[in-house]
Length: 312
Image (cartoon, rainbow, N blue to C red; front, side, top):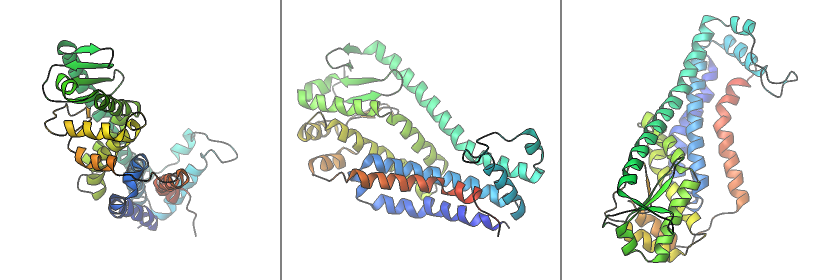
């Protein structure tokens, strides 16, 4: 067996089992939710890359592994010849075993990508259907820059995407004070500006494929919560803590929103209210930058181990 399978296997175990448990227990994730989201997604990318690299090394013998690595290295941008695609002669020189190994690794990479595309298309279609209903039952309020619907339950949510819109129920307008309503609207605008629906789709896709993996289960629950916290932090730039916390309290129970939408309230409202009302440090920007760089390095480790190893 090709002994080069051991490094990507170790990376897969670390990123898929050990690191998720450590990150889930860390306090800094609540203090820097955007950095934490990047960390979860980079761990997911590292795991997928490690699996693809492991499949490649598993199907290749030792000598073929180095020959294929040399071909890849010849196309890297830092070679004297510059980045170039392998020629037909180079591709023709691959053996059937190498073709099979590369194909299996490509499948390991393309399956999650295809699942993500399917999830995005399905979510977009669902949002389009809900938008068509809103055009019939809702009315645009220029002052709020939102669509108002007649419903007694206090609710504020957004439909992200190209034609993003924020929806406010008549119950929310009656229940919330102007500062509270403004805070809820800022929360929803933060979701739209941050394109959080794309990150949610990535997390749900990975969690659906690897649902038996600790990383898959935690990504599916942690990323949505952290994105809500990130939206809270951005909303707090324009509103007070009391206004946002009381708005969450008013909408914490009984709010029913479409599954593809972001709601200002929701089941995480109690945890977020405690976080909003409890002072916390955001951490030094340099420390967050170092952490983000380390996580990015971890994500590309499998490729470095696979392509840059030398015989001997």
